[in-house]
Image (spheres, rainbow, N blue to C red):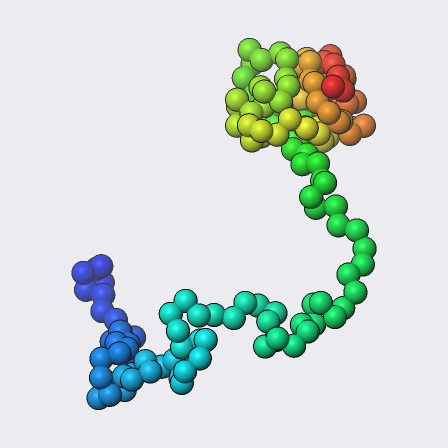
Length: 148
């Protein structure tokens, strides 16, 4: 079987529904939009949660609690094993170096180093946070873990 020999299964291909092309087409007059009113108009739609003017449920229920979404701090996480994969010429690692090597996005300056993986060479790593295991592995290899 070759690509040019493939054919659709019978019934898989449908004719496009042509609305507004006369009564004989089956979708004439109101074009499948029902009678008059808001939903029959172009651009007419009812927003989610709208209950026809009745007080909607989401306004009846009490809103309680705290949401930290708008005040959160985005933290980029990097494993120690990823630092070992950096170029051998790099001895000092910070957010700019990580962004230049594609390990984090450019705007992320708050970096946390996690302890998964191994590092075998001395690196001077500057980051906002370190896990205890990551700090131990970096210092064991002869490097420095600087919180900054």
